[in-house]
Every structure is written in C-alpha cells, then in structure tokens.
Amino acid sequence: MNTFHQICNQFGKSRLEFLSKATQSGKAIEKWPSPSHYFPFHFGRFWQMTIEYKVNDFESEVGFFSDILGFRIITLSVNYAMFSVPDNTFQISFLRQSSTHSALEMKSFKIEILIERILELTEELKSRGIAFNQNPTKVGIDNHSFINCGFSTPNGLDICLWEQV
Image (cartoon, rainbow, N blue to C red; front, side, top):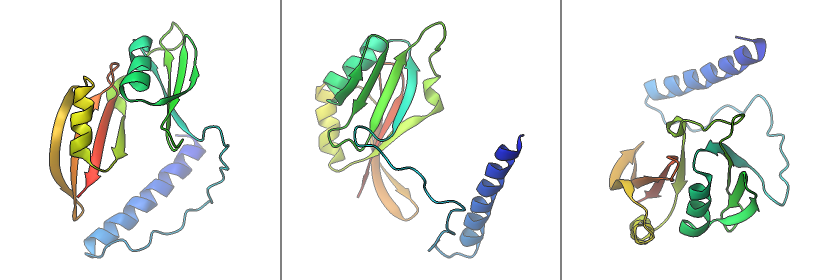
C-alpha cells in the first residue's frame, strides 16, 4: 500500500470509528468532524461530473438513455456517448467496448436516484418497456421509511429508484 493510499485508509478508518462510537453511545450523529481538506472543485457550466463506463452493446445503451428514459444528449459519436438529465444535475457517459477498452462488470456499482411519485413513475417506465428486477417495496433505513425498486440498462447497469415516504 503506497503512502497516499495509507493516508486515505486512515481517514476512512477515523470516520468509521466516529460512526461506531456514536452508534454505541446511542446518540445520533449530530455533527461529523470537518473534512481534513476543503472541496476544491469549481464546476464548469456545460457539464459538471459524470460516471463513465464501457459497454458491450453501445447502440442499445444509447437508445435506452435517449429514447426510453429521455435523457438529453450532450455528446454522441460512434464510440462515445454522454447524457444529462434536463436540469444538468447528473450526467452519465459510456464508451463502446474495444480491444483497448473492455466492458466493466456491471454489478460492480449501481446508480441510485431519490425521486417523488415512485409508483406513478414505475408504471410509466413499465409502459415504455422497462422490466423491473425489483418491484416497489417498502423498506426502513435508520428510522426513515422508503419505497424502492430497480431495473437494469440493456448492458446490465442496475438503477435503483427510491422515494422517502
């Protein structure tokens, strides 16, 4: 483990220790300690941050985000696509798999979206042909009630919808 990795590891352990002590004392975490460093990024106006991944079936992923979900196309070429939600608060991009870019195992991460009117949205997405791998289910997390459900993109990226109720 290199020095930078060790520093990051120690920061993470300190955060988890703080969480453990707060949980053991039965007190809610009222105030996390301030980060060791300030947030240094000043976002541009065109797009701010994106998750990028590689896909086996590029055309299906393009069609899914543009025509099924209605994301706005920011950039599209034969090997690269970037999409945004209408208000530009979230971007996602992907590359066509090639000999130099292999597709990611899609179960490595997922996208989670907190929304309103989840039951109406679920029916709307089903009417567009999306098959849900998890139907809306009520769950409790840390004294909060949620409904969540999920589906996958054509390349297997899981998308989980949440609504606080």
